[in-house]
Length: 273
Image (cartoon, rainbow, N blue to C red; front, top):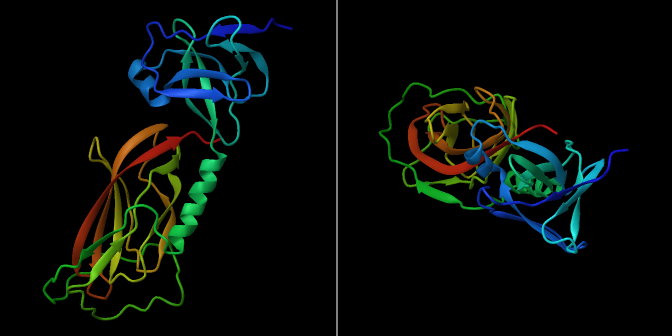
């Protein structure tokens, strides 16, 4: 059996530590470099992950953040674990690092509760309301069809021939950060159109850095939600600044264009566990 290895945190020549790992039970604490900052230090990769702390299966050794008599943390062999994600890395000399693993189960539970609240109309975060433009009361070509992923509210969809939108408010639910699965096009995130709205939504997700559109919905009627959809292309693991753009059209057979609304947020694409 191999001898346990002892790693020493070494920030000489490393990037700035922006996170802290604490194990209060063991009295252990160590700074770490966040995962997104590692992309700046190593834009093409090239660093070595020697082990991980926080969770694991096979013990590899220990990590020391201070002197010999200071508390140490168990280091495990690198392994992917359910409901865990890498938050950052502790430098241990040269291009060698120990990964810091965090539990994401609580986060996913909170996101599920948030999604249920959104479906029930209890919008989390910023809610915006704008007054619908008084467009000329003329019939235009249809803007589109109802999105096939729209989840039915209550009863059948009854679209009037004409609806008066002048002076009415359009409500938008706030957009929190979106967690996607890296490397696949099919994603789950809930977009809702409050049933009080006099309009359809058409939703577009745009990458802020490049202006590329990675998803555009068809029409989402008031009182309906989209919780599963397909991106135009899969995203690699990482964080992406995006704009979620809403076009609105009158909820009638004329589908007159009304207001637009943009929400700036972030997509966190993570490897499937």
